[in-house]
Image 1 (tube, helix red, strand yellow):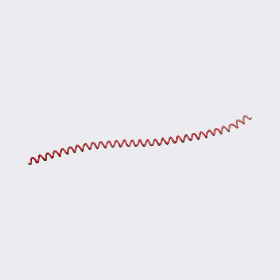
Image 2 (spheres, helix red, strand yellow):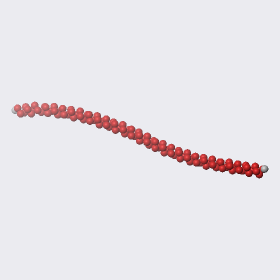
Image 3 (cartoon, rainbow, N blue to C red):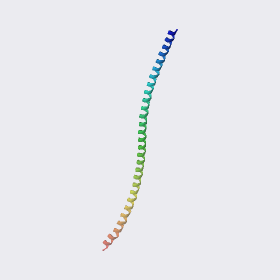
Image 4 (cartoon, rainbow, N blue to C red):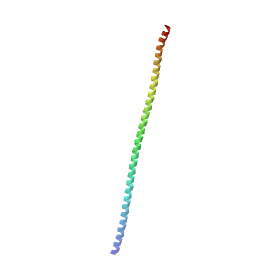
Length: 107
């Protein structure tokens, strides 16, 4: 019976060894998958950071564009005001020259 007992124990030991080998292979496989997933996460984080920076830059660009448009509108309004004032001043100067020209004709 001893011999049968040793054979059974050896079979159990072989089964245990096979299970350990499979478990070790599974652990290695899972670690590779984890490392791959972590690398992908880092890539996604980097891409997300780049996209967030682009969005921030785009928002800033939009704000700058709106500011420039407002400044352009203000400058256009000021230009029209100045043009009107210059026109009035030229009309006033022309009106000053007219009496002098008429007085010169009278002599």
